Length: 179
Image (cartoon, rainbow, N blue to C red):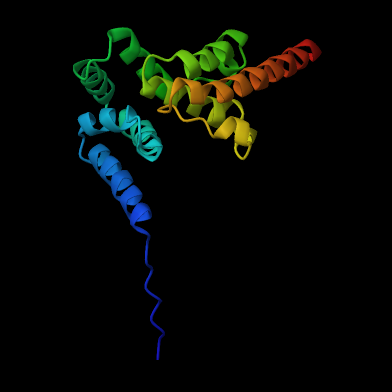
C-alpha cells in the first residue's frame, strides 16, 4: 500500500510571501505591467521586488512591444522619463565588458545610496550581487541591502559596496595590465 506524503503546513508569513510572489508572476504571465511596476517599487516587501525583477527579466523579451508598454506604465506611475529609462536599462542587464568599467561600477554603487526610486536601487543592487560579484551572497555586509529601507539603514551596505567595488576595480586593472 503506497504511503501518503505528510501534509505540509506553511507558516502564515511564508504563505503570504508565496501568494505575493505568485501574484507577481501571474501578472507577467497575463501581460499586466501595472502590478509589476507596483511590485518593483514596493518599499516594504523585498520579496515582491525580487519576484518583479525575475518576472520582468523573462516577460520583457517575450514580445517586442513589452518594453514600450512597461516604460509607459512606469511613466503613468509617476516615474520621471529619465528614471523610467534607467529602470529599463537596468533590467536589460549590462554586458560583462561594461560591468568591468570603473564608471559603471561607481554608478551602480551610487544608485544604491542615491537612486531616486526603490525600483532603481533594487535593480542596481541586483546587478551588483548577481552580475558583478556573485561571491557577495552570504556576505552579511553586502547581501543584506534593502532598497526600500531607510537611507540611514542603507548607508552601511553602501559603504561596504563602495569598498568592495574599489577592490574589484583594482583587480580588473591588474588583469587588464597583464593582457
